[in-house]
Length: 489
Image 1 (cartoon, rainbow, N blue to C red):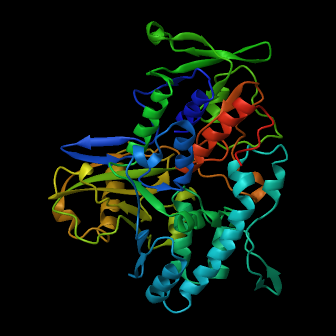
Image 2: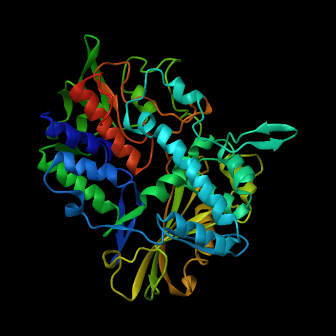
């Protein structure tokens, strides 16, 4: 998605753009599975911050995003089922509505504490939005790494006054309710982040959803990829599918083009000359395609050598109509927070099948089911990717545990189940975060090889649909305007 976002903008700016894709189709993780009249998003199921794609479609053609896809806001934003049985229906972007819902479901004062937290989270968002998301990574990026933008509340601990440095400490010290903590931390868990280790600046993740809403594209989020692909075609971007780039060619100290696997030479393989190369792959793979070191010890670098969590997904085909008023998204929280976080952090002797926080998506969308007497449901949870999911029946047992969790969201699920499809996880890249000595920043969109750029979830400003779209805008700006580009105004 980041590569297509850059391609469309560059084509509008007058560049001839050829996009080489290793697989047989466009969209990357924004994929789709179909069977027996059922259809499912196998990647992201919701779109936060749609303004990123509104801007992309505005800048690349006459038809707006809303003319190309049917975009609807999800309201209520989510249903949350907590381990103690508490059932919370959280409204959309209305702060007063959220506060009232929390006070009613969790007890007086809970909503007020969450509302006060959102005010502080907004301050963190205002401090980081432009330098962290809308501008290329600054040469003095350590400024972003050293300053914690979240204005935490002073907390007396062991005769000392301290402020929250991690997302978990915000929950412990400011929210003071395990259910509010679970609500807060679910936004980090969605990206495979351990709230005990990530900076307090991660407060911007729940704030983004609260402030800008959560959106769905009718027909599935795959329709967003389809619309972007068609926009690229309309701007005369050329696509070559089944084309694996095997080398990035350098000449006279700058990029000169790419070499593509010989087996597709008859269809445009071999060497292709280029003034600029934009790579939508992770930096480890990219380093293997070049003959020079693209980063040194002074650069931001992702630790890709260690395992990153991924999303384990189960697709459910159900008989019977979706009940009226069912929530589009339900988060079923894990009963043992510590066990879940230790599992994701690969602590020794931790059970591979510890219960996990499950997200259940039930879109009311006729395009995803054979008829009104059936329903398609997607259940997912974040798991370690280093697990050997092909060993024995481990994947089947994990799928069974997720179906069990989903029963809290879908009435009569097991009696309605026709079949299920399991999708094994691939490593995720989270959005970039400020503070924490830069451990949650992503590599710059520029590299040490002039003319070579990084785009997508493994590059600044990180993973997630909005962030990959932003990366496309940043790369296009750097190519069109040069190193002096400082982001859109």
